[in-house]
Length: 108
Image (cartoon, rainbow, N blue to C red):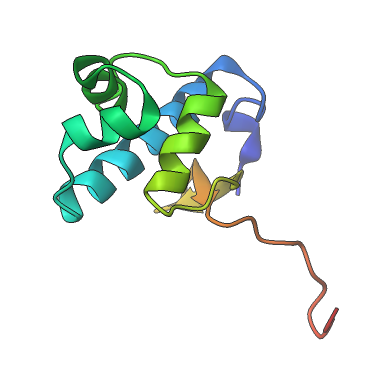
């Protein structure tokens, strides 16, 4: 893998990837479970139009609000992004929940 083509994990580009990932995961969960935005908005104390825009990736939420929303949706609130490779091209991948780096054969 040619990780030199990817920016650092703390770069603005990596944060954009992470933001898009969170938004898409939330959209798919809400759509799959057929949850009404109005009910989620009441539970999170966020006006429904703002919550819908945030879930669609058009508006940001604080980390605490995303965490509350993920808890309501019963999604893990911790994950990692790591450099990876697809079709010979470097890319970022999100791991949910975080995976640990283990040596093969390590049972700890």
